[in-house]
Length: 167
Image (cartoon, rainbow, N blue to C red):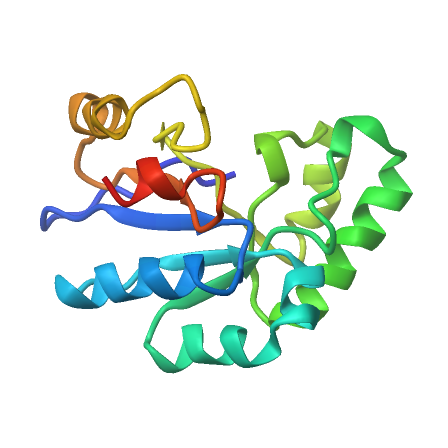
């Protein structure tokens, strides 16, 4: 599992989970564009089916994409076979080797099998932008205090996280 990607040149990796979602994914991309930054969007297969044009637009804008399962399945609440099938179904929609498990939860046996086909991308910093008890300033401080060269930072392109993510 990949938690951080140290580089010789100062580099951080900005990632977004759960999209593509109309309006929210577009606003996140507009913000990234304004700084000439690209990110990686870990997409839910169902959301790709609902919004195929938006998924295509994410890629056209130069962002990387990865799978976040087909329907944001929690690996701890289902069988290994069910989870692995859900990962493959989501990955078929994304057409990428990149995979991030929802909630950061994955069993050893699942990871051992999936790592044969996918690069499992975790993170070393989670912004917690989805937490309604935090402010955007709290989320920014969380990232700023812990970021280091090669950090993989998680944000969310969703309604729930929008206020804090766009801080």
